[in-house]
Length: 320
Image (tube, rainbow, N blue to C red; front, side):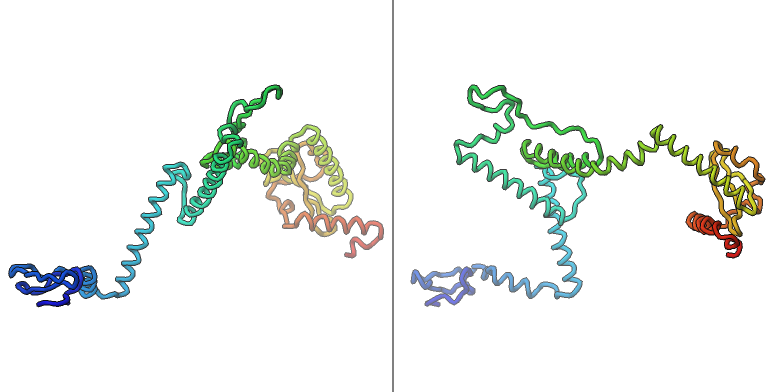
């Protein structure tokens, strides 16, 4: 067999014992009788594989998709381990794949900024080296004056959980010390803005209630209230009873139940004010006359306000 080869490129001649001539060299070659058959090339192997592979069913598609997803997860896990090795992440930090991508973007941007700054310093010979920013003493000309240490301020111990979290987040970044110091300063400024209004509220609701002068003023107001309640109960109520207070754990507290023009009104009395109501009838806590009827504070004082307005007009109170 002579002439251009009809065998696909990369394969041997199919028939042992035949001769064939290449298209370029014009040389005839004799193939031995015991020569092996044709060796398939890549295209032939792919075609054979397609002819023997299993049919593409829904179950096969799901299996292949699962394999691809697992391979992607393994790749992301490798990236996470690499980020932990270089200090960009903590090994015990919870993360998702979206969080991992954000970590890579943020730290990549930070590294790019630091790299650009270092590159600018390298090209500008007059610019101070980055290490000079952290030097203990700056390189100043003679006669400039006393040298003040120029070290980055250390991170002060956290005084609150929020500051603790911010300091830990800044400390985990792979940034130079002067960048971290600037971030610590910014975090303290933000916390100062937050703690300014809340410190006053905290003082008002935690420290001020225990202030001796405030407690004395509050006790005086409660004492005046007890006098007025005793006066109203003794002068306007149709019925008044006093019973132990079942809703207060401290012993000595009592409740005054007064029926004012057909409606029940009640007040708590501390042991200090017990002398103001000792002349009223005292009954046990389970007495039928000492049972709260469910009236609210707003409803009680609306009724008292109505009574106060009606006292100036004779006959209007009882006719309501």
